[in-house]
Amino acid sequence: MRIFRRSLAASALLLGLAAGQALAQQLPPLPQSIREQGVLRAGVRCDQPPYGFRGPDGGYAGVEVEMARQMAAWAFGSADKIELQCVTAANRIPQLNARRVDLLIATLGVTPDRARVVDFSEAYRWGGSDLLVRRDSPIRGLDDLQGRTVIMLSGTTQAAWFDANMPNLNTLRLNTASDALQSLLQGRGEAYAHDAATLIVIAARDQNLRLVGEPFAVSDAAVGLRKNEPEWMAWINAALARMKSEGLYTQWLEKWVPAEIRGPYTAAFTQPRPNAR
Image 1 (cartoon, one colour):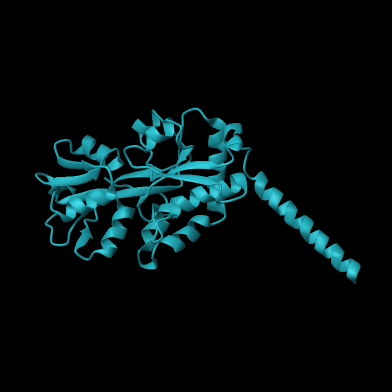
Image 2 (tube, one colour; image 1 turned 90 degrees about the vertical axis):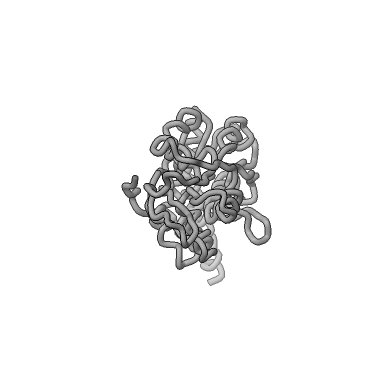
């Protein structure tokens, strides 16, 4: 009986090792430059809940932060083998191309202009845009913005959309979401244009604000890499596919998004991108 138990334990150990090796084999080899670093350097947002923000303890939190930590765990065997760096909409691509980070998981929408200077992974979600206004605002849609000032962040898909579609609009362009929200509350602008996912969280916390509810500038979100890094791109795409197949996005959304507002976020990760203005 004792020998049988030892044999069973050994078999279980071998099966466990084989399973671990099989999982590891799902990902292609890391590029030598990343492997030699021994740590993953990721640019993430610090003001974009639920994707990347500072948690109650001041640490990094959010779905995209979880993605970065998971990549570190698969690459180096520990989620702690990571150096996270806050990036903004305006400085994230310069930080990547200056080699201060190895990748961007930073609410980065796929656009033709950005594709000229960075390479994009396969999309892991889509994101729409919306407007945040005061609850008593007369603004009910995009056409109501003429003659008003719209707050937005520099370097965002929203800024590019308004430049292309409403070029004569009055805009106030800032660098951080906190500055944009503060400007809206101070009356420096009548509407705040941003990712709908971010605005949903803000509106849920402040009953004096509401979403306009007319989606626009819908785009895919992807990991940003420097140009011409095919081995790194192959590894990133394989990691994203594994996250999806293992249901990790759903777990992270359950962790970081309250149930009452989780629906739109889940749709962005699991459903086809909708048509929008």
